[in-house]
Length: 126
Ligand SMILES: [Cu+2]
Image 1: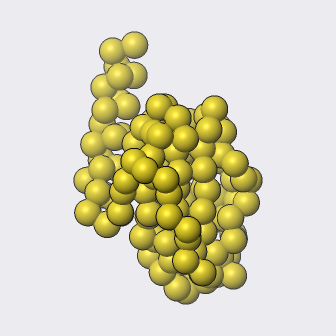
Image 2 (image 1 turned 60 degrees about the vertical axis):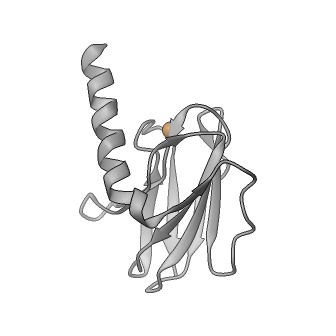
């Protein structure tokens, strides 16, 4: 149990270092996403969608609303090589972050929550 807690803290720390400087955040109602951006929410340790469609070769915003007090994030995984082109900050809600995602080459990716790997889906950059 202690080892698991230490691992979770490490993940939170790394994700925060990676993402804190580039994501807007707030605890109030989330903003309306701009066109060309994507949004997703988590509640009851489930994402509200299984697929995200985003533009290829263009940086975009991903609004992530965490509707509960459980720690979640959104990370994008390239299944071709296992790399993570984007790892969003892990945080407990209710609250939201506007993730700034760098341009992704066209293709099919996976997205997941790094805390709950069973929370996952498909992201298509097109
Ligand atoms: Cu999660």
